Image (tube, rainbow, N blue to C red; front, side):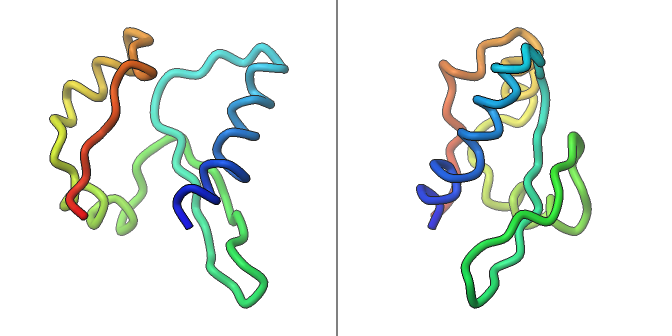
Length: 85
């Protein structure tokens, strides 16, 4: 499911932002709802929301500050966050 969401939601959004020349650095949170027809996008946020953030941060093995700095400096492509399975 993760790969499907990346391919069908995240990458098209990023491609659309690039096409419209919208440079974005930071967090882009995609709020989803799983339905009988499959995942549906409810919203996009440019901030950490609560309670959504808590389970994500509990699984994060990478250093969050390093991830923020990489985002600010435009080095995100070179990094991949490590999560506990």
